[in-house]
Image (cartoon, rainbow, N blue to C red; front, side):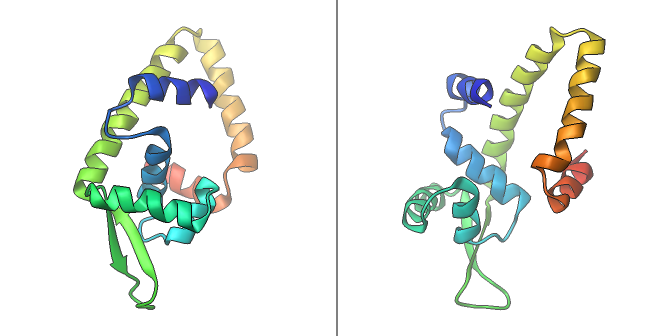
Length: 136
C-alpha cells in the first residue's frame, strides 16, 4: 500500500489527493453512505471528515441528499464529475500496477493471485467480497 500511495502521489491527477481518492472510492462502492460511514472508513473524526467532505461538495465531486426514510440523515454520493475524476485516477493507478506486475513471470503472477484470493476473506468482509466479485 505504501508503494501504491507513493505512486498515486507522484502520478495522480491534480484534482485529487490520496485521501480524497479513498473517500471517492468509498462513496462509489457505498452510494448513499452517511458522513459517519465515510469518517469510520477513513479513521477520522466527524468534524475533520465534514471539513474534507465540504471541500469535495464545493468542488462538485460529491452530492449531498436527504435519506429517503430519515430526513435528518444526509446521504452522500458521487456526482458525474466525481465519477469521471475518480475513474481517471483509478486508471492511472491501475496502469502503474499492471506495469509492476508485468515484470513478474506468469507463474509468479499466478502465485500473487492465489495469495490475494487466500487473503480476501481475512481483509474483505463478506458483503465487500460480493461487491468486488460483481465488479469483475
